[in-house]
Length: 245
Ligand SMILES: [Zn+2]
Image (tube, rainbow, N blue to C red; front, side):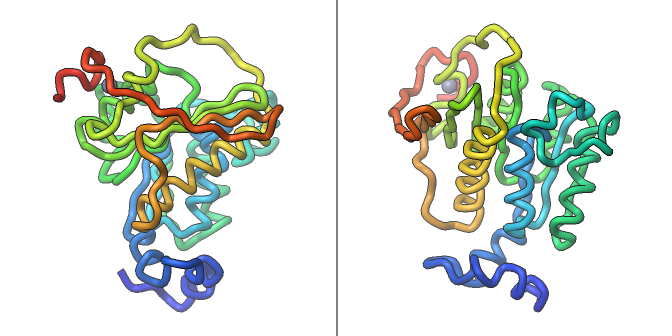
């Protein structure tokens, strides 16, 4: 896919990164990403994917921004309260980078409609806050054999996993049962760190550059300012990927 003069100007500083060049940028332009959730994680993920020049972003969220979201959900502002979050995200992203096609999907993610929502995306970014819906994404990624970039935050801490099952453990191997659903405290800067890492891992995969470590859990400790990596194992009895083997 050829780059226009405008795109060459816009992406000049990243095209110069070692190993990129116009070919990597053209691969990004030809890519589609499904972003599940336009909240705390979805905000930095969608904004950095948009300004990096990913060709098409499909972003799904059925909720509306509330006052208590604005400490971290930087896609939205006071003027968007009451609007759908996916629609609000599209307004912000269209302004940030009109070269990118943003598809706003104002729908709940369910087992039935996930195929339609994900469309022809080559990768799924998990920016959700509940595990039952994350497991729906996990099964979709497994069926399609596409990566799932999992992110989660609480307080000043967070974690990330680049899952490409069935070659790696799936999300359900790592978290077999959904933890009790509760509203956790979150600082916006924490969502910024984990969301930026998710965006980086997604861009590297799509552009065909150095890959994020697959099948590892990356844990951010915000109090210590440290990032640790832990190996995770496939569970042969996993409810989601066990029978795929
Ligand atoms: Zn599994």
